Length: 115
Image 1 (cartoon, rainbow, N blue to C red):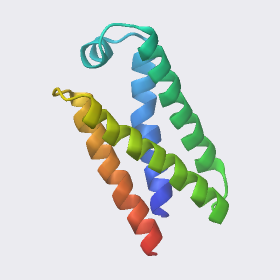
Image 2 (image 1 turned 180 degrees about the vertical axis):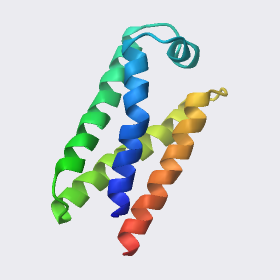
Image 3 (image 1 turned 135 degrees about the vertical axis):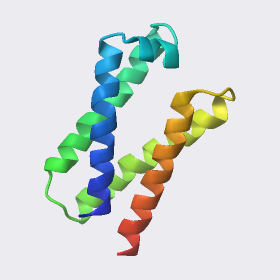
Image 4 (image 1 turned 90 degrees about the vertical axis):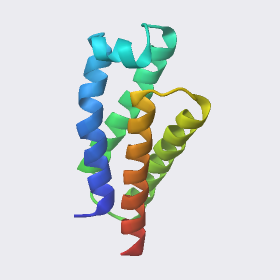
């Protein structure tokens, strides 16, 4: 399987429960992201964008243009996830998971580009 497609599935598998938890105001979200604010709603919209694009790209035939678009999406997420660790200097499970996911995406992009 194309490593970029694996990255999309990682996005989908992670983002479905997270976005549903945001929408349902779950305790986990409040504990990890803080009280409900406009900022959390904006973050939810960003997560939904990543989710919708991942689903769209999974349904799109694989070609050079699609792979370029997927790689762009993943690089945006990698940058966002790494910057979250730099800008938020306190321990937070979201920051740790962001770094792990960023590393997974970097590895999958490298695998794709080395083929």
